[in-house]
Length: 179
Image (cartoon, rainbow, N blue to C red; front, side):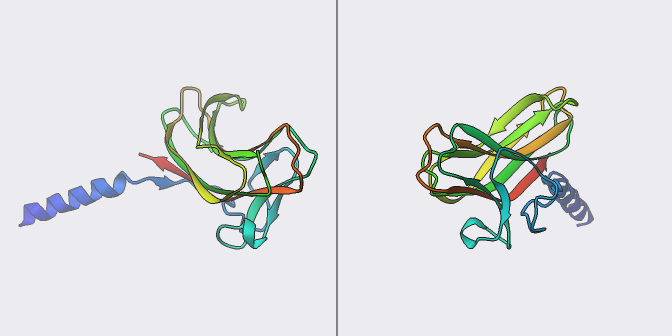
């Protein structure tokens, strides 16, 4: 009986120690009501509390795309220290309204000490108007020379102008370090 108790505890330890570890992103759901912890490129980024653009909590980040703006990349990113061989799974909720032809997705970029991209992984790409959809990148492994991992929400505005103001919103970034 004593031996089976020991085996049970050993098995429990193995199960617990091989679980994914939640990487502590700063302000992953934008509940601070601002862009603290994040960098962005391109026009139109702001934190919103508009109910149709928020998945959970009280805030999300949204990209406003004005009519007449075309052929432009926009990204929202947070980078954290990493190392070669580390494995990650990432999640992000995204939605778009009044955005025909606009493409958007989740991306992990592995960066060296000079912020050069040494590897990247992308989720499925969404296009046009969509309800909130969970995007996932599973078990992306950091390649040699990795010093940081960047989790990014990317938006591509196509060469055809939108007929009216459109929005792409992102909420609840999640990054897990896998065993």
